[in-house]
Image (cartoon, rainbow, N blue to C red; front, side, top):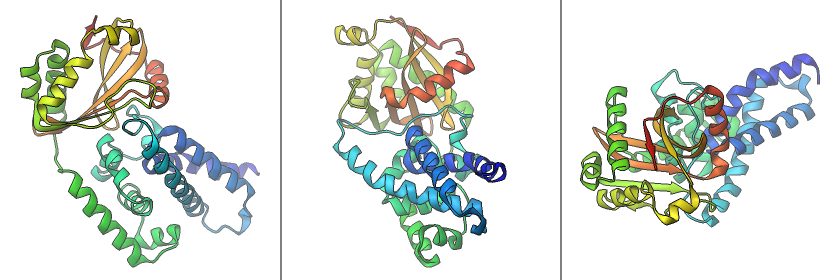
Length: 312
């Protein structure tokens, strides 16, 4: 491969990685897809490719569609719940953030919701909403018609709107609610937790089959509050898993405030909160060590801040 052709791919790499992460939900799978796209570029008859960025986008998208079919089967067969991989803000895989739609498309909440879509609807939604492709371009990428792309986008938006109440919460309110949530959870105060949780709050946790986590979503403020009090308490079972001391840090993850739980600098989990007004409606807890590797390395490289709280 010539230096010029290599540079063409390297120029496209950040965008390809961001697209793959939105489509697949994990950094490792996204990087594998980008590497496979590189191999396809290396083997292609490059002089006859009129629009390399478009060609690479088409190849990458279709690689991800193939991966999604097998990934969905694995996730359905896995133990417990599946959540996407969290990334610190500034990670190149998060991609563009110039518009509200671009920021929303990579939120932890949206990545989770995208799992309900069939792969092709997911691809149309991401290409249109996060990367502003026209329906003509999407039709070329997916081998469909413009009307087919428009219909798929309409279906995707309808499915997503059924699973999500759109809301805008300012950063100051988000930080204040996150702090109130943390204080109540660390203090084990059920009444204060109920005050900060929405009545129909839910909690989901992904242990990857290796770290103990609730196997099913918890629904209702009382159930979520009881569960949270349990995971923040020093019990014999917890002591066997975590020797302590444990620190909780604030961070911005996937464009939203989050809590990082660490033991002696080792990241144990990431807690993301989705707010509705001034209450927490969804709590998502990522505990799978495989999905914490990238964010752990990034967090350590940036240097840890003073913890918000210390446990045990």
